[in-house]
Length: 599
Image 1 (cartoon, rainbow, N blue to C red):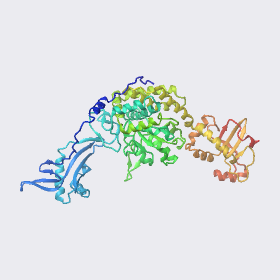
Image 2: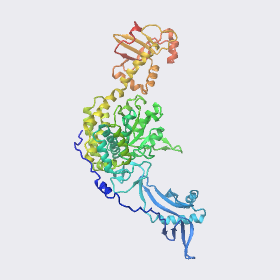
Image 3: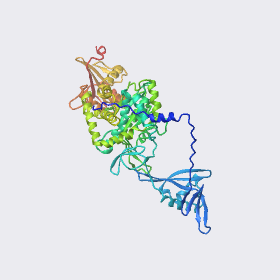
């Protein structure tokens, strides 16, 4: 991996310290409390104090219309083009504000605001207020806002939408639910990284995982690649520092607190629809789902949820009028935490195991003190890295980023254990290495390249046996058959009374052949969370774990005798005696199981 071998200390804020020391002991005048002046004039109207007045030609003076109502601001959503108007009005004893759509700026809808305390009970009052607001509106300039986050194309330009927008001269402020406004000091944040993160590979990995969200979002938005949302899970006990790592991951783009309603660390305790909806419109901002154990999804629902998130698109749904509703989309990196593995809870489908990456048994922080200093510092300083990285990526352009990704992928293919999924795995892990490379080039800070790469290789080695469904099922089935051997006929021995027949076991030439009726095999596979038995059988066949008839995955075998047709009917639903036998799933083991029983 072509990570730069450079390291740069972060400049200290000595000027601030000097100024602070200089001011010690000096008397400082208290700041005046700011006052709000609502007085404005829009002929023939004016707001004076808490009243709206209109000029009366006959009386040659201003006369009272109602309690004050005015437009505070006009906001234009650059994504939807909707115009919103923030109204301020005096309600009995204080100023209130409310935001309405511009389409609601009419006498009829204004009258509805009486319930909020607006003083327009009479029709004449509503007419005057509407006229005044219409005139005032023409004197105000709209401010731009955006509610989506991450990469987007605006007026033909690739931009990154954070609290402000990178990559364009267009000015806009984020007005969404997430707290992504940079807080604290940029230098303090970098100093925190230098002292507490750099040099410790697991924490460096957390930073790179966060930055990978920008790579995935950019390449998808620019249309130069189609990348799944990357999902990484950190299982382990609380003492391993996984929560601190998750906070570091989120801090590159926003508030890393789960207690903050708009923080990027969100609870895993929600429905599948609620959790996926929280990602809609996110194209490059990292999100944490904290504490997996709080979620009670079934294995099937959790598996479906993982597929949905990784494929960047929600499910098709109908609106209240039973019309098809366009599903929301996203493209980012999701990190989850929990004491337990997600892999152990989901269906044993191979596709899930190339979409979810787990990093178990890792000590994420150096020690307890390191974790506390990081948590404290990250809650005070956050949200700086993502927009700075975005500017660097815009400077490079999506094609150069894609070339960096492909170069890292080719290097990883040479390093990773070889199997038929190596290329797919290498592409996903290359997103993390490319994030590391971009971080080094942007901030001139060297990362622990060799250790980072080794962590990714070790993760893949550990995942291989878990990911390969055939070997895993093969091993699990062996124990299952041993446990329930009483339900199988053994060689040519007659069944015991009241025995439920699941199949037959025979030993030949030092091997054990387990003939299992399909209905039983499917039941066992489902119990082990292997939902696609067709794929499973083909995998078993490709690894020579299966004995089968030509061009099939099944083997005909005489299981039931003429005296056992009632047992055959109970189990298979088929009547009569099958002279040539029934189709079975025949699994072969390279040793003689149940040798004592057979002898």
